[in-house]
Image 1 (cartoon, rainbow, N blue to C red):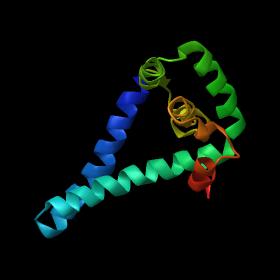
Image 2 (image 1 turned 180 degrees about the horizontal axis):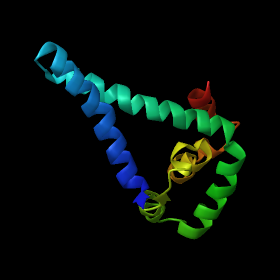
Image 3 (image 1 turned 135 degrees about the vertical axis):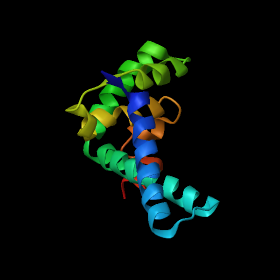
Length: 126
């Protein structure tokens, strides 16, 4: 079974590598700007999906945040490690609720992401 860290590396490799391979096949060249923009676009797609999940699953994020805050307190790096080693199944790989763990974990560093009345929350979901 794959974990979150492996799934993210695989996603970034495929979302960058496949378009670059196609670009090279057509144009027979690559340059640093093309590579950087391709990487950014792939990364931006997944972040946009996560932001949709932030808006849809804020109540779940708030509940999980409280549990993580209690468990990790002043050592949020432990929650980050736990997140990256969380198993990913083919079912939850495409679940916005599963990926809301991104915001649950990030909220330990910036609590505005679990507060649906904060500026940070509204900036990301609007």
